[in-house]
Image (cartoon, rainbow, N blue to C red; front, side):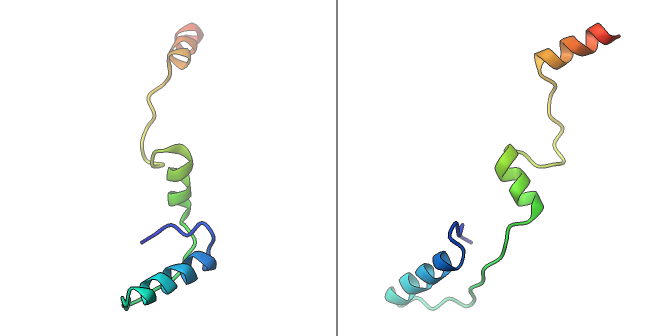
Length: 65
């Protein structure tokens, strides 16, 4: 698996490099990232992880009680 920031261009360049190195892949495909993969790339954590509240959030909670 490799990132393909330029989509099909990256796939074609990879195929050319493999061919030049005389490597025959069993399979090659291009797919769009899943929503979970995008979320992880943007936030740095999975959607299931519970983020610890920041100091400011803790202070606000104490004041509102």
